[in-house]
Every structure is written in C-alpha cells, then in structure tokens.
Image (cartoon, rainbow, N blue to C red; front, top):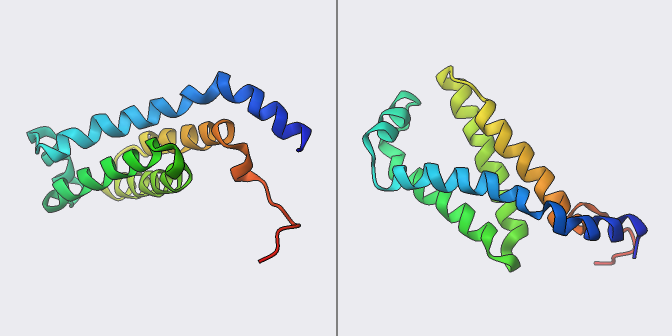
Length: 128
C-alpha cells in the first residue's frame, strides 16, 4: 500500500466529521421542503421551482441517506456533489448568492478525501 494512503488513513479519523456539516445542512433544508413550510415554498417559487418543492426535498434527503450508508457512500458522495452543483445553478439563475452551494461542494470534496482516499487514486494495473 502507498505510504501517502497510509498517512491519509491515519488522518482519516481526525477529519471524518467534516462531512457532517454539509450533510446536516442538506437535512435541515430538505425537511422544510418535504413538509412544505411556507418560507421554503416561497424560496423555491422565487427560483422558479415552486411546483417541485416536495420532489426536490425528497431527492435531497435520498442523496443524504445514500451517503450515510457506508457501503453506498461513494455513490452518495457523487449524488450530493451533483445536487450541490444544481444548488449553485439554481441560485445563480435566481440572482442569489452561490456561496451555500460552493460551501457544500468544497466541504464534501475535502471530507471525501479524508473519508475514502482510495476513491481518488488510479490503479493502472487493473484489468477489465
């Protein structure tokens, strides 16, 4: 095994909690969408997606749930960063700040680097 991967696995336990921040943010924003709280419906209508509030909330929560299951964490990570990209696009189109989506995106990439460093390696010896 690579020495840098060993060092990352040692550091993994120290930095694993970073993913909790964006995951909690996504849960906190998914629940008001699912229960159709007025402020969230108004925000979604301002972004032109008022009719999809419930669907977006369910998708957001499913992305988080897939990430929280250890065996599906890699695909959950990809779903969350794709969803965060959608947040950035929707906020940009609505003329709002894109900072929340960027924060979620950056924290997820950093967290995944410490959570699963092998996710970022390329094995040239693998045969298909």
